[in-house]
Amino acid sequence: MSQKLSFDQFEFKKTLGTGSFGRVFLAKWKGDANKDPVAIKRLKKAAVIRQKQVDHINSEKSILAALDHPFIVNMHGVFHDPRYLYIVMEYVVGGEFFTHLRKTGRFENDTSRFYAGIVTAIFDYLHGKNIIYRDLKPENILINRDGYLKLTDFGFAKIIEFRTYTLCGTPEYIAPEVLLNKGHGKPVDWWTLGILIYEMLVGYPPFVDEDPMGIYQKILAGKIVFPKFIDKNAKSLIKKLLTADLGKRYGNLKAGVEDIKKHKWFTGFSFEDLLAKRIPAPSKPVVKSKDDTSNFEDYPDSEDIPPAISASSDPFVDW
Image (cartoon, rainbow, N blue to C red; front, side, top):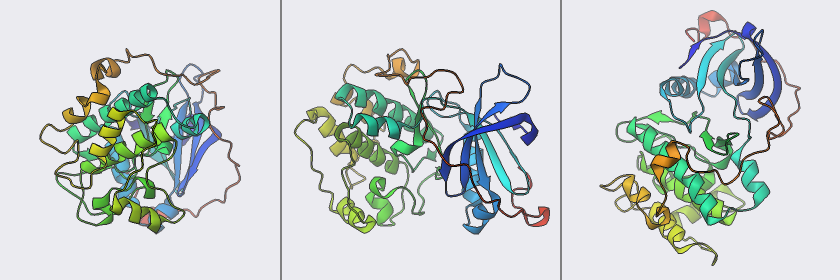
């Protein structure tokens, strides 16, 4: 659960990643070497306000505060100063899933099923709370030291009862109903699971093009080419998830997530054992210490200092 924190409690270390509004740092608790290091997402207030992302950031904060799941990054709390917002989260030492996938090229069938099972369990949990994630991609998944995954970056997540109309997501992972602006809901997450399973097994997503418009055209055309080596049950599940017709897409039918869990590709796979972490992970990252950053890319530290926001015009004054 989140708590009230302050800048003085932390010693900021290495940059772990950068984004459009700021960067993520490894940080240590001052005066307490026994406490686990944390990842602190530092966002520029001026950029967030200018790009009209205030609601998104507030939503991310409130959603993270409401979540408690073994496969979702925990938020410890938040604080702010005139220039920045800070979201303090657990540090996931194994680095980005994206790096792991790119290094390996593609994953074996059983490995892909293990990771897909984790994402299925995450979406099952989120949808039970009427939260859609909307931004699944390998860059938003981290690997823990035990080899299990943790979902991070809830900037696009949204609490919905029925459907929403905002266009968001990464081009290769966008569902057809989002592109067609028909209104979308929980089924978009199941579409992105289909994209992820394909990318894990093949090494690249099913719809690729140099130009985003080309990607969108391919998504709407819906033609998927499967390499010969793909397991027939994996192919069957991918097709059931990458179905433009919401009345036929797995995860959105009467049985809900059970259609996915009981699909032949998951035969003999126990979601109960997965949640209890009784299934051995296919691989574990090499970790030297709890504050090891070797699994993350190197980023230059130079950065311009953003303007301060006065208290009278600060939408985050209650953080």
